[in-house]
Length: 532
Image (cartoon, rainbow, N blue to C red; front, side, top):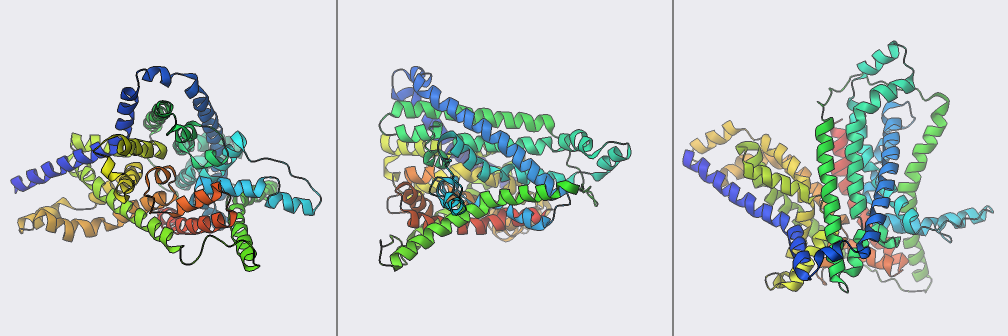
């Protein structure tokens, strides 16, 4: 029996080492390529060509972080701890902007808010003019704020639900007015949730490609993409800067989490609800306006694009490039790629989860750190590293333009999402039951199939669902390494937007948002409600 346990541990350690190397490979290859591709890598790294994109990236990320922290925290406060009407409705609608890839959200804002868009046409009917242009820093900031604030809203809302109301009640009994209670009691206790969500938004903002590409704002990710073929030294140098910036954010997040780490308070049976009084209409207007501009407006834009195109075709105008005969292939490819990536991510992360939970192995700890950190690796860097590897090496060339390489890129980018759920799933398996099955003669494969897997299924499905949702919306990896004969909804929607095929963009984007919305409901909103 001891020999079997030892053998299982060795197999798990070997598998975890292979997985760790795989997750670290794209970033490591980019670093190696940067310092071997040309004679003066440091000179290019610190040149004027890299300073501009870096400063613009930081400028955008700071602005988006501030605005999402304020917006997400305020919305969470109104919908969780105030006597706001229709609270259940707002709590359901406010996370839904997560279903929009940022490039679709940015395109919807351009179509809705630019001169000649839906808003300007509506205002013109009542005699008002609208001349705001959705481009550059302002456009990128607005798009990222509207479609990433749920990363702050969700953790802050969860924290507010569980704050012990006794402390607030005591402060009020001692004579503190409501604003003082919020400032002195509530805000310090939600600081961890707010900072964690804000750092995630900062990381998202520095790595986003879709919104900044459509808004024509030249950040690091956009500069990397535009220079990848005609100026590879600059592209590699910009990649090093983005990689370093992402590493700083991850280290900051770890330090902040450790610094503010506190035990999770037990959920109070009677949370303190604050009376908005005369401010209630303003609060309702604020929450409703947030939903309208971040959710209803984009949905209306997509519907308007699609309906206009269908109407024009029906009237004998331009024929749509979307039909029942060619619509199923992108849907199938999107679903297939997402499912393959989800299954592969869960499978490759499991050895590290077993080592971390059951064996307390250093290899498991290292594997866990690398896998989780890879989630902070911007998709543009994963795609670029794998693209250069297939173009410049004999070993990688056979994998060029293959689904296997695409799935590998997805797993590296999003596999870290399954680590926590996998560890929780492994912890649900009783070692006593496993030892009993081993004593009865069941080998490791039979034990895993008949005992471990049924007990872990719920947790593994949750992690796999998050991967599926993320893969469906991933843009730069898909653009850089997807096979030419494997079009996805993301690829179709982005290309239609870039080529100004508005009706087709609306149809492809609508299908993508619909699939993404179903998964968001199942694996984010519904799970959040389940754990409330």
